[in-house]
Amino acid sequence: MAKDSNIQNELKDISQAVANLDGKTPFAIPADYFQQFPQKLMQKIENESFIKEESSLSPLMRSLQSKTPFEVPPAYFNEFNAAIPRTSPATIKLGSRRWISYAAAACIGGLIFGLIYLSNQQSKQPTLASNSISNETMASYLIESELMDDSFKELEVSTADAYAMLDVSASTISDMLKDIPDTDITGFLDQNSFEESKSFN
Amino acid sequence: MLHQADDNELVRLFKQHIDREKAFTTIVKRYQEKVYWQIRRLVVSHDDADDVMQQVFIKVWNGLDHFREDAKLFTWLYRIAVNESLSFLEQQKKRTTVSFEDISASVEQKLIQEKGFDEKEAMWKLQKAIQLLPEKQRAVFNLRYFEEMPYEQMSEVLETSVGALKASYHHAVKKIEDYILHH
Image 1 (tube, each protein chain N blue to C red):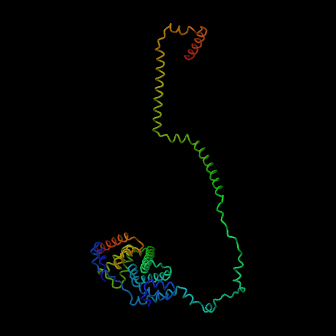
Image 2: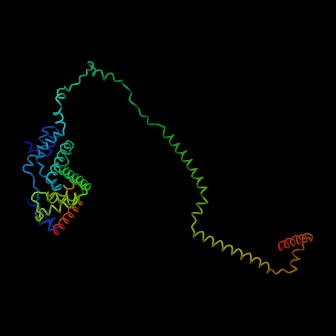
């Protein structure tokens, strides 16, 4: 049989060597195989099917009649329908309020959960805060605070120096103290000299 | 006469239990050779092919009542034949694995046992090369090379996309070429 030209061309494009081969199938089959096969097949199907099963029943089974020996009261089936009680059709209540109880339960549950969650969050806060601060932030904070300390020291020193540098004359002091009674001044001096000596000791 | 009836008519007669057995026998006679060769090229031995073909047509007998006539009867038959053959080969492979036999050696043995085997002859060499392909690729090659089936129909038979089939056929031909040129 001549090969389909499209298929042959496709084959040539892929491989000239395979396209040049004789595409015959060399297998042999028994003579009359195809003549006998349908009959052999039907025999097998019959062996496996109910047709064969029915015909292969034992003589006793075959002799039995397929009729059921039971009897029913006369006109039973005519009366059977009448005996069925009439029932009103079942109604399905669409306006069920069951969903309200579900919604309420969900709200209460949500509230309890929220409260537990918030209390947990509050107890965890310091840990979370310390965990959330990165090393870099912490380092920069420490450096800044150290600088701040230094500047405060400088400020203290400069204040002390400023007081030391104040040039206060005796006349200015007497002007300033002229309205204050002597007893108050003596008391103030006694108190300060006592504290000063205490701090030096 | 039933042998003049088309496939749809035969299926209808079978389904309606009108000349059921005659309609079925007509279908068997019409397609047995094509189905047989499809199976034989996959399983190699005649005895195995005969067993598989009987299984195929028993399945057809049992399933024809449910066959949807929107598909072609021939395509359906081929699909059953390929699936049964692949299942048979799979079972055989399992048996070979259990008995620690070499699969390629058993395939070669089957070919050697064939009547008229001559490994120098190109058609036997071709068969040997085909048997070395993976099972599904072998089915693809056989349908295209020997049956000259269009890819669209192959796609229905093998339930694979046309693109995948073209690629598979291309690879199969290349492998066969390699075998032919080096042996």
